[in-house]
Length: 124
Image (cartoon, rainbow, N blue to C red; front, side):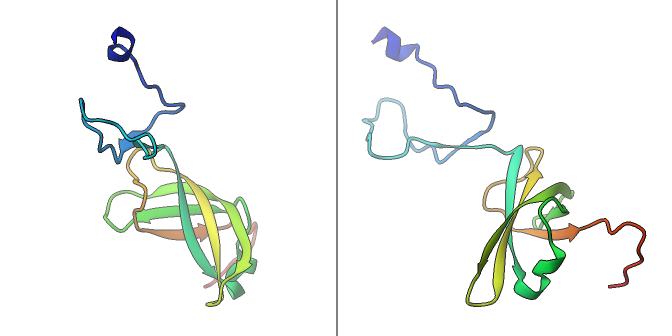
């Protein structure tokens, strides 16, 4: 009983506790998830790109993420390009973004991909 009262639960990384529905002195169900820990520093933005624009995006390209909820923009880079095209002609792309603790899982964001083309003038 003493060990249980003085037990400490430690996560392998810093984050925010979410979906904690357990209360003290309530019986626990071992088949259900106890809680979720979100790493808000290393967020991942997932977005889709048209298959004909895929040639313009490469792994490592810089991205700017702006939440629709408002606030400042966050920088990141393209980390993964899924090589599968869905039925609508879209390709899923993921980018690692440093959310600085201000982005939350499931947030809607606007993503802009940027690439340095060297000494070229590009007029969109």
